[in-house]
Amino acid sequence: MQPTLLGLARRAWVLLLAVAATSGSCFSPDFNGVLYKCGTGYVCPGNLTCIDGKHCTYQTPACSKGGIMIDVDTFVCPGDGNFCRMGYRQCPTSVTTDLCHLDISDGGQPEGCSICCRN
Image (cartoon, rainbow, N blue to C red; front, side):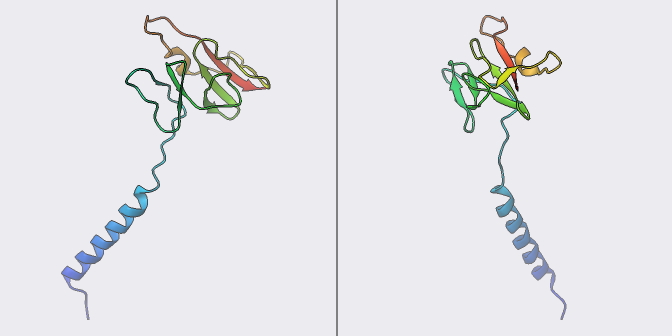
């Protein structure tokens, strides 16, 4: 007995629904490598926290206020007065990221930004 065209179509729909149901639950965005702004009317995505009313960051062991991991043991600490904590130091100038260059104040001037590496 061979399957009918209708039977094959039903199986295809069941398979398609099963794949859609299981793949949708795996969505887990990575907010590292992106500098999000926050403030009036702007809420930080995911589990990021708004520091100094301007930057969305994670609480990290490297930054005094909060930061974003850009590599293993390497963090961007955006904002004025956001320095490297004990156990971390300002990375060598060979370690760069566009995130610091994109950190512009409302007046158009670059704000402070530290790139911290583990000692």
